[in-house]
Length: 535
Image (cartoon, rainbow, N blue to C red; front, side, top):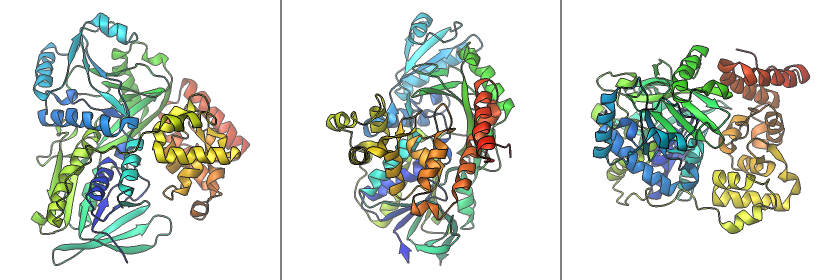
């Protein structure tokens, strides 16, 4: 019988943060995720590491938490954070009175908001609207949610923390008002079995209400869908926010070679609803071109959406609900050993993990203090390792691989490249992903689909949106015994193409339309693969 002291449900940022914190304190912890890690909210947002300035007027507590965690994540997760800084700009239609409240709110929250002239703003970001009335520099940054989550898992593994993907919790088992374990089901085999534990932490984000229901409890979590647009260019070097009451389409976040515009806010019944419509995209573009007047000249790469877990005891919805987090101890509901943590922001995931881990450790009589704010997630890649890698990687591929892999995995990949020249070939030209990197990720045992590989390596996330690398990746996956037995190669390819199509369909004009016709020619006509139909 499998067992752990604590079972964490949910493989998003909060879940992996809890996994790492508990493991570092010496607790036997197992994280369960029904699909692949970071496939939900933590990978379906704009990737903004908040300075807290966005909440400086409405939610001082959230603002202070953000600026403090911003500094911590820059320190412990250097390779996950791009220190872009941010601009807040006020346009003619933005309320002048709000600006004064915002400046005062930033001051109270300890957030640096440096005023600059419109001319200085245009010097920093020449593409900005020339209607700017006022501008401020703030310590916003961009953060890679996939990378941050996997580095937390790597860190936890060094202390004995474990994860099981494609393992869905179907029942929380209890006796005499005390949790004794969970019943789970394997996604591929459909086998069900029992995992014994003393505590269960429900960190399932917008699915938290559904998990609580497995124990017969009610948690008021309202899934709030946000749609975003990814552009195939870096429109600005800095994050750009509108200086007004938080609303739709008022944040631009540069990531690597792309820019993300977001987001909308729409209450939905099902957190699985990640659909995006043409009307949503058009609305975002109309709002966004107030900030960048030439916005429609940039190529739209794809659209995507995710659900935020908004908790409100008073029933508040959408932007009316707090962005703070809440911890619920269900001992108060008569079930000891079950706790729920929900709400919050990606930026505050580490703090959320620390707070709930403090409570659980107190119950377990574990006195080891939290160290997650001091110890780096992964060791930095050395200059020596980088120099060695330059022999095998394309010109700028070394730095891309070093930041996404971390020191240990990077050195293993370079060793593969040195010993096996055939593994030096690029599977994904857009993101410079080598065969060696994909082989290494498959070997680790938590990747079973092409999309799993995509989330770990960024394969298929570049300009061609997987048109070329998807077929190559399926061929590589088909050779892996732990994967081939679970899904047929053709089904793998169809599922991946369909997922890419979902994001392209709402932006089907210009180059995106041309790209879709190319994909249809390659796969539909040339290979007779039905992966791009609007199902």
